[in-house]
Amino acid sequence: MKRFLSVVLLSGVALSAVAQQSDGPEYVPPSRGAPPGRLGTATRGLRVLPLAALAPDHTGLTISAQPALYYFLPASSGVRVAVRLANEPNAQPLLDKDFAPPAKTGIQRLELKALGVTLSPGVEYRWTVSDSRTSSTGMIRRIEASQDLARKLNVVPSGRSRYTLLAREGVWYDALDEVSRAADSAGTVAGRHRAALLEQIGLKDIAQHERQLYQ
Image 1 (cartoon, rainbow, N blue to C red):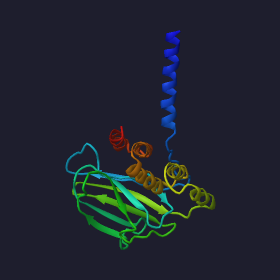
Image 2 (cartoon, rainbow, N blue to C red):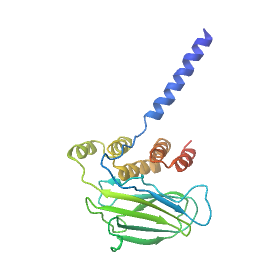
Image 3 (cartoon, one colour):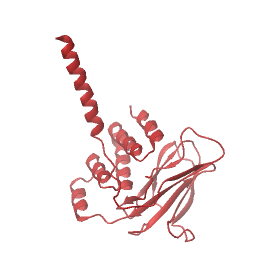
Image 4 (tube, one colour):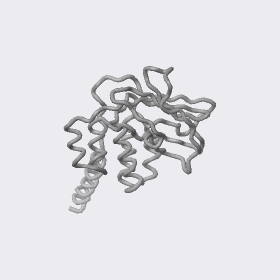
């Protein structure tokens, strides 16, 4: 009898763990075909973790005119961030600026609003973060939210329900911004959810690093 109860209890714990894992956000990429997005190149040596644009390997979407961009900085160093039209490489960049080393390494937020950068609807942009050794590139396109999505977002103004909805609707940059702000304020659960989203776009080493911070 005791053995039976032990098996039942262990099964319950296992099911609970699976339920917790499946309860996190799931990023559903846009159904439209898109050119490859995130690219990374390393030079002059190797690092345990890379400097990386936190972007999917396809063109990520945003419904914000001035979204936040995120990147992972493995070591204390200055970076250069550029935002350009994807299909007009010789056009004047929207942003091409050096940034001093931040107070701490890890995931960094770059507010396009604070920099006066506005994305036009339907236009594809390429953004790159680089230091003296490495560069990483992501793609972004601003879309207009559908009436259905706008209605749903009005019901969930912030937090877990909002970033879960945005991820499910394929709006990568806004989902990442919402979950990151939740991680900054609420901590553990949102931090693990952000790690799950990063793993879903193939940034497994960075996701594992983030999980360890929120154990």
